[in-house]
Length: 128
Image (cartoon, rainbow, N blue to C red; front, side, top):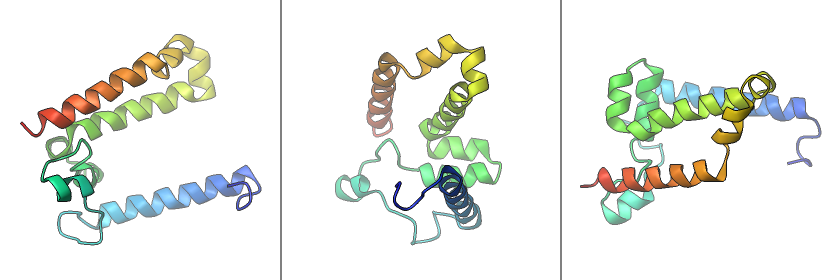
């Protein structure tokens, strides 16, 4: 990455542009009705839903303000976005100063193991 982006500003600007384009595409086009979105290889091979199946449709629904529909597509994705947003807040300099214990808990090895367990349980439970 350092060869392409020599300074942080250009890297951040590029990532912001990529995020903006991605949000626009997911807002404008419904993954249910358009074939250019990625299909889940796990589902195509096995016929079962992986823990991430429905995330694209859930993102589309969230961008249109339909939380209930997004939750029905993939509840773990919706809750995961809230988890990531909170992690971003506690990782920021202001959040790290205000909530040092929460920051250490949020990014601990034990938390990662618990999250992995939740993902596996969700993946199994949604196919029962």
